[in-house]
Picture 1 (tube, one colour):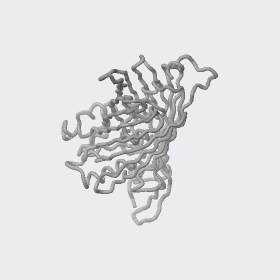
Picture 2 (cartoon, rainbow, N blue to C red):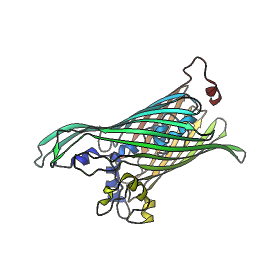
Picture 3 (cartoon, one colour):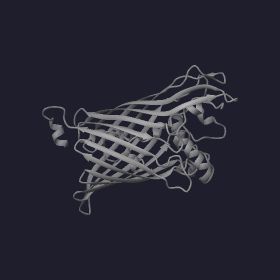
Picture 4 (cartoon, rainbow, N blue to C red):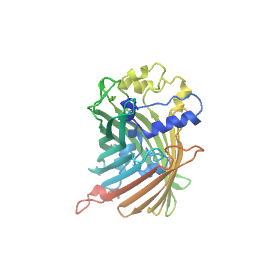
Length: 387
């Protein structure tokens, strides 16, 4: 099996599954937007995973850094940590998973620091030559380490930034078609805005929120010393949500997210890879060969709902839609949440919906989150007010 090593290294269940599914069931001309390191766009936590992958404007928690770091100062608790585990595309492979750990620490009522680490393990890979003789066996993993700072500009408005370092482990001693394989590194950043306000509609108090996040804006990456560099999955996300206690002790939230990759749409010449990062971001809004219609097809839609009973038991559901010519990921998600004092546990399940089997079918996510009260003997004034 003499495949280009680059394919192995940027292998993603999401992309590979989407392409094969689109070719068999999509409509129109297939023109999927591909990037390097697509694991950076896999939501790691069970809460968002159960709500159709929404997360930009829902209430903040320890996993907010992935979707919108600007939400973090609006957390009530001064500190929280979260651990998640996602067995990925078990329909194709049993040894691929995403592990995530993250959290935040509030400096005061207006400022917060956050950090996270993600490890995407893609199992053991075997390279062979055209005669089937094994050349190399290695385990492939990709890691992203994040750090962020967030601040309230007012009681209703917040901003946040984060920086990211990404590394992939590869067998550097291997030579592929005269190209030396190298360890690959990249750096990226996010910038986000979050706004929320309580309003009264029909004598009901509603908490309205919206957010905007530009994520994974950073350097291009290559896996060999001569290969053309590829784009990270830079993304623009816009989301809105509302929450209401329609009767005590019942609370419901409904959210909608729109996401679009800020990378060039592939063209027949292959010249889209020659663009700079800034040029790619700008042209991503008008470079689709199919014009405006195709540009709109590149928008992914997520809608989700969350019901809490007495802030102890949650039921969640959602739907994710991607156009058939851009990957055809279309799925329903459900999940449960259980909160007991400072412990919050979540589980989500991706429900098979198509007549054909899809590699994303039956995807599970598990999350355990801990919230900590003030570590001081006497809580600071800002914490008393927030709680």
